[in-house]
Image 1 (tube, rainbow, N blue to C red):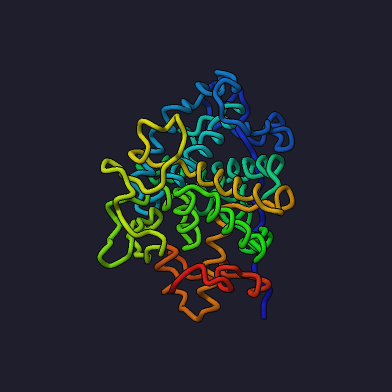
Image 2 (image 1 turned 60 degrees about the horizontal axis):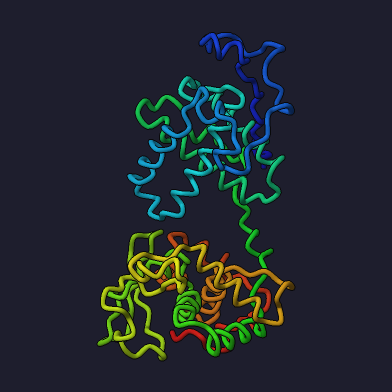
Length: 364
């Protein structure tokens, strides 16, 4: 059998600042004055405008205007239904545009796929010098690729897929999830005990949604009007898919009378700052993350491990796999479009330590 053809990374050449300033983008780029990829500027990790020079915000690329246009493009995209994903893409595109302004590269003048390939590789290399996590770099490159889909939307002159070829652009690490710390049986017991004994009513709801494998955005958007007391279930909207899923109500919830008549969202933030609009505006996903971090501080595992809300979602998928449910059935509840992701989420070295299985925290 013949060896598989291995694509060679394209030679990277850039326009010099002089060529860009003169508008002569057709000039040869083989000049000794071409950009040295090893001397390219670092990316700005913080996107706070007060820490970025004004010329990098309003340089050859109008960052604010392009970002607004890109965001509108994302809203119209049928594949991106999550507000969190749109915000992430917008943030990453801004980081890319500021970097382009640092090297005085006008993206609107890119008319050649090879040139775009060079820019993509250069930015990827720059990210590798700044971030150690492969998946972080991959997500940023996915965002930049989507941004170029927006730039190329009208004229269709560029081959975006070729420019962002997986042979030379960082892609997601399918095994990265295995490195994330799991919730042990003991830690789960301690979290449940704390929430039951000292947690607020809102914290009980947060634990309920997380135990059912809900994303933070789904928990934050859960609404009182979607509770069906007659059938003892609640409809939860999944932003990723645009669909609803039905979950059985927890045993400890017995009446809608616990909610204020004007309340819209189930989970609220018990603080003086949110008092006036409590329950009328959804809490932030960061609030849910902070609640989980608070739970951890009340366990014997404080400062020993780090967990995130997503850990509950992984345990839920694992428990259903072990219980014999099909990938498609699990995907309907978790909201995954790719069945391959179910096996990735369900990976667990020791299923006996899966508290959602052993403690029967979820009713099937």
